[in-house]
Length: 289
Image (cartoon, rainbow, N blue to C red; front, top):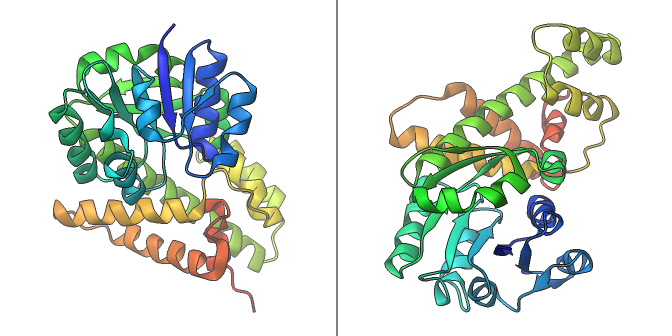
């Protein structure tokens, strides 16, 4: 039985760690706010006092936190990952971060004898709970192979992309596309509402046609009800858009549409919708007059 660690028990991490436990693995967990640990302890996980203690108890430690700042803090902070990482104690960063941060953490881990993978995921709360995430891994291939049992418990597909940084870039491209699709759907709903059309009929027609998708079926009802329980918080999507635009700037790729979409997400976040689902971008689009 493999010994795994898991750092970060938010919406995604708690479900991913739970699937590792349910798959029969020995799992030690940690979270910055301790109350998130109890549900994992109740199903058989062990608790660590800090990230270093989790890494020391584990063959492979996985991390899922909110942004590059949190990832760096987890790795380089007091009693952080680097305190314990080394031969036989490897690290897999599954957070959505930029490629520069992934490379920085990789170099720190490997300089201490540990192996490193970045492995961001595509999917939100329900796929995380169901073990149906898509995992985009890059880094040391032998660690990718050794982590396969864990990836199988957490996801439906794990792809190896090569050097560290490729996973981060792929995830940012995917989320930029997803934000675009979400914004287009929200604008269509806003226009239909303003035009006096029946919104449930709109969703039925869309679902019967070429734009039918899991996104439409999951988020369309939220747009009609204007209730946005967080599956993927809007503030995190706006962070990913910011990182995608920074990547585009570095590689000289204009993203005029994505830049405009980012402004809608910024407005929704400023208006107080940051902790709601990213479908709440509708609130930045609707004419409230």
